[in-house]
Image (tube, rainbow, N blue to C red; front, top):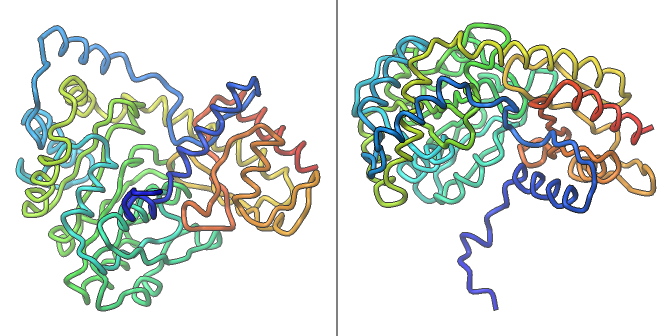
Length: 394
């Protein structure tokens, strides 16, 4: 008899983590799987950050940390926001969490009541929808397409707003599409929101520095949106620190205080050694990680060229992050090697079993016509993976 809560029974498993687990299982069976499913840089954490962590250990940082983060780290975050984003925050407006995912969960917990609607431009990061549902909110999906570079227009936003709309969540650069909203595109969305003063914005900027067009813009930079925007960021992607688990928010102080209160009852403060290392990471100039961004740009060029040679893959050129999000709907309804492809989930599973390449179905991101392919892998792995996919589909 299942005595688990309805909450957990109704919760979807993270599709990216599920695919990674399936790939690990097949590897354990001796299969040579190429993993292009996880959003994880394949670089090592830079040495100057590791040195800072070792120094913190030697200085005996081993006690509970303040719930919202060390003051020195919060000061480094404030300086980073000012330097990189032209945003002015004070200490009470910053909350450090165990990864940006916890930051998002905190926000949902403190902002949403049962029945509140949250607009999610599709495709959206895989966990947004379920984090909203866990707080009894209702995700409202706004479909975009490859033809508009997977970006929501002002008209689409206006059409999605109802009296129950409480928030809009988006990422730029976007996971999974790599799309980057320009200042002009965000201004158009902000102009719509000016007519609806009770709607708040979550701007997820975790991929901020992995930006190939140059010029990242934050919604909170608009004076008339500053008090209604929660800016979420972290060090996982830009600094290759996924396992260090440090994320943070800059927010109106009443929201930040609520997140601090919530976190105090759930996890308390984030890891002490990781926090000390992140101070050093954020104090460094963004140019210190340019070598990673340059390599991602090379890989983007490589994977787009290779995918263009596969019939039925429709791609656009992503402007940031390290994903391509091809439309593969031309394969739906076809039978290949005895397997019928009905949707993106079938297609992704086919690639895993037949090509031994792990990708993620677009259904998990709110777009059932696409799959997400991560190019956070070596150029050799990318070449081999796309060669295998091409062979399997031919």
